[in-house]
Length: 265
Figure 1 (spheres, rainbow, N blue to C red):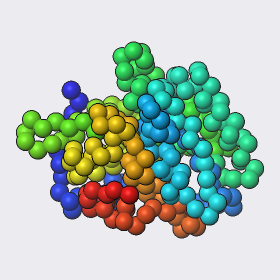
Figure 2: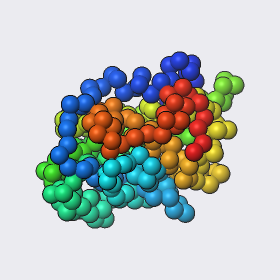
Figure 3: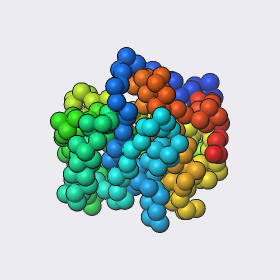
């Protein structure tokens, strides 16, 4: 069993508390409109019968003034299969296609499937695979952003107080290591999503399930909520996106998440 995170006080749940520890690139300016290319597994992917993540909520509700993007999240993907199956080639091809007219960003989030024994991917390999993605995204002309894995909505209630089970702690740390080694920006979605889910408790958290018994994938409202969290974290790293009006998080969503209050869009 993974580590368990206890519920925290509302005063400690401000979203700023888990982004201010990292440097913010607020000085970055753009001469071109941003275009976001999303790479990842089913917790990034478009909602479907067997998957769904934050990606579409992010693209559809937080981008403005012509900013847009494409979701290449793939159900069941690992850092190996995403490359071997041709998805990563599509990401790079899209970057090359849009880079003359747009400023391309590539978000990269894996871990849910890489950790499964059947994948046979060590943490060292996982880290190296992420670093290679970053290097190739840079070389293609994009700004890569590594994203730590979205938390699963599994709780331990053995103490009488529901607590999120930290099942992706190793992959989270490996993602941060890859970012530091490759000089890429990263956002800690695992930490942010875990703290929010701990605050609102399982009854509320399960309303975001794709189906009632799926504690990993998101339905459309869940995609909007966690897509908004992703956008808020990104604006803390690249402040010009918000300053220039390209990225904006719904005020009610931001306020509720900042204070650990359940939000339904």
